[in-house]
Length: 78
Image (tube, rainbow, N blue to C red):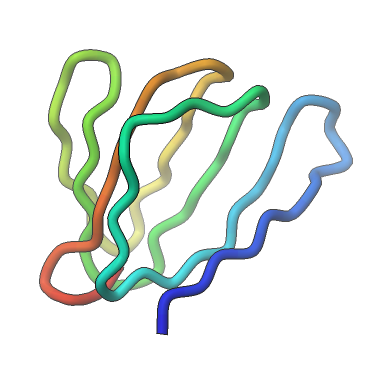
């Protein structure tokens, strides 16, 4: 099941995300705070800063505030 939990950090302007994507994909959007993500398992693809990227287990994702990006799980899990 796809699920996402946003966690407010003790650092101002920083938000942490705990997510499990199996079939979920999201369109281009941005956030008003920095986002930090750690991929625990699976693979994820996203476009950010004019580049298409693939990340896997153990990778850390950093999204600057107002950084336009999209994303989707690959191989049925992320």
